[in-house]
Amino acid sequence: MRDRVLGEISSGALAPGERLGGERDLAESYGVSRSTLRAALSALESMGAVRRQSGRTGGTFVAARKVERDLRSMAGLPSYLRRQGFSADARVLSTATIEADAETAAALDLAIGALVLEIVRVRLADGEPISYERARFPAARFAGMLDHGLGGSLYELLQSEFDVKPGEAMEQIEIVGAGSAEAKVLEVKRSTPLVAIIRTAWDRDGRPFEHSHDLFRSDRVRIVVRTPAGESAARGVASTIEVVA
Image (cartoon, rainbow, N blue to C red):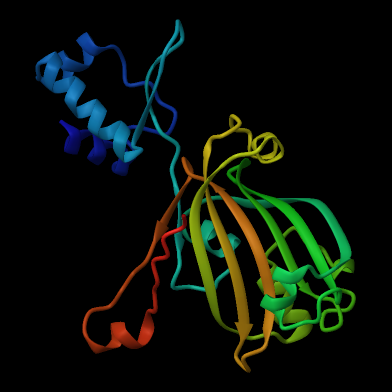
C-alpha cells in the first residue's frame, strides 16, 4: 500500500494538499486491513510523503512537494526551483553596508571591520516561504550591487554585472530550531527544525566572494548529493562530517 500511494503521488493522481480520506474508506479502497493501513500511513509520514492533522478538520493529507537542493551544484536556488517545476520568487527584507565581523572577515579574506554588503531575503516556492537567507559580499569588489534588482538569482547577477565565475563552495549543514524571528518569516512554529547551511563560495581564481547563512524549512527541502562511482568520485566530491558538541 505504501508503494501504491507513492506511485499515485508521483503520477499526480494524488495532488499536494489532497485529503486521503478516513481509515475505513481507505482500507476498503486499497483492500487492506486497518492495521496494515496504519502501518503504511506511519511509514509514509516518516518519509514526508503525507502529513497527519488532528481535530475536526483533520485527516491524512498529501504533503507539499519538496525542493531538492543538490550540494554538488553551485547554481542559484531559482535554477533548482525552475528545473523542478516550481515558480521562484524572493522578498528582500533588508540590505545594508556593514563592518565585517570576525567570521565574515575570515571567510572573505578581509580585515575585521572591512565593509561588506549584506542582503537578507526570504525565498518562495510556489508562493510559500522555503528559506531565510543572509548573504554577505565584499563591498569594495561589488560596488553598486545593492542598486540592482535583488529579487532573482544573486549568482546570475554577479556573473552578468561583475563577471564573477563561481569555482567552488564549502557548505556546512546542521539542524537548528527556529527562533521567533525565523519562525515568523518562514511561517512555522518556534523551535521547528530548520536545515541551516553556512556557505563560503570562491570564484575560479580562488578569491572568496560570498559568505552566507541560509535557513531552510525542513518540511519543504530535501538535501541531495549525487556521487559518481569510481575514481571520478574521489576527484569530484569532498565531504567531512563534523560532530558538534
